[in-house]
Image (cartoon, rainbow, N blue to C red):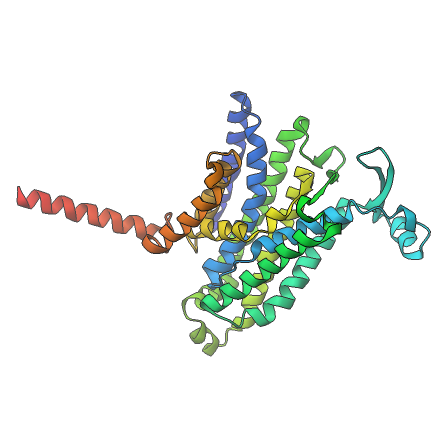
Amino acid sequence: MLRNKNFQIGLLAFIVIAVQLMITFTGKTPYLTQLTMTGYYSMVIIGLTLLMGYTGQISLGHAGFFAIGGYTSALLTTFNMLPYRSKPLISLLENVGVLTLRKDLYEMDILTVTPWAACIAAVILSVLIAWIIGRPVLKLKGHYLAMATLGFGTIIYKIVLATTFLGAADGLSDIPGFSLFPGLEVSGKSSIRIENYYIAWGLVIVSMILLTNLIHSRVGRALRSIHAAEDASNAMGVNTAQYKLKIFILSAALASLGGVFLTHFNGGIGPSEASIMKSVRYVAIVAIGGMANLWGALFMGVLLNFLSLRGYLGSFDDAVFGAILIIIMLFAPDGLLNKDLFTGIWFKLKRLAWKKVNTE
């Protein structure tokens, strides 16, 4: 099992490097921008796969967590605290290195929170919100849980759309680059496109290592038992409420982290990132990839998000994801990249071939 996990992670790393070399060699480097964005969206998808596929909890509000991460980091790194510099709290934060002085879009000095501190604050806020809403909401099941998370997503969307200091319909812009280390920055500058591609996919690989180890551990077995028969798991002594809440928080943190990095990469964020259709899109990708199939969800997430970001789906973008969700639920509820589905198709083809031979 350990060898298999290491092989899969190694293969992913090999593909990431091979894709970059192939794209650079063929002169298609703009594709790296969409692949970088796809990497950050993939963090939401694999977190949601863990929640839906391994604990059986559906969420139609994960775009809300993505937006909470992105908007929090965007607001903290653009809000000018220079007029309050003499205040004790602001002075303390500046002295401990939480604040930084930089130039804004108009070359004026502004005092803002550093991207590192903003990122940590954004993830902590998302975790806190996930804990607050997760405790009552995760007591619900089936379509009741789906409707409750849909309500949460709607609230977040309406807040970012209607709040003036969050930019309302225009969103927030002039978000600075996120300097991870000297010479390594999360930014949309074309001169560091390759570096940003590896930052995004490095985060995805680290997330996959974390999640694959989790699902193959004792915790993973408990999660699968919850998905299969929650009442029986409870009877066997598994604290199902705690497990579901922790996985919900973990998936929210991953979504939030993806939102933070994509916001700094794009240099801005708008209300569309919190829209309900974004949540539907994430659920559709998880469904088509296979509910309990991290690798399938990751593959389909890369494929569909890349096609969408390149504009191949045109104005029918949201309609395509809605249609995918309907079709998958009707004909392949366990996803397309599902071993049982392929086995079933192979068995039917063999039976048809056998009937044809016997009728000739």
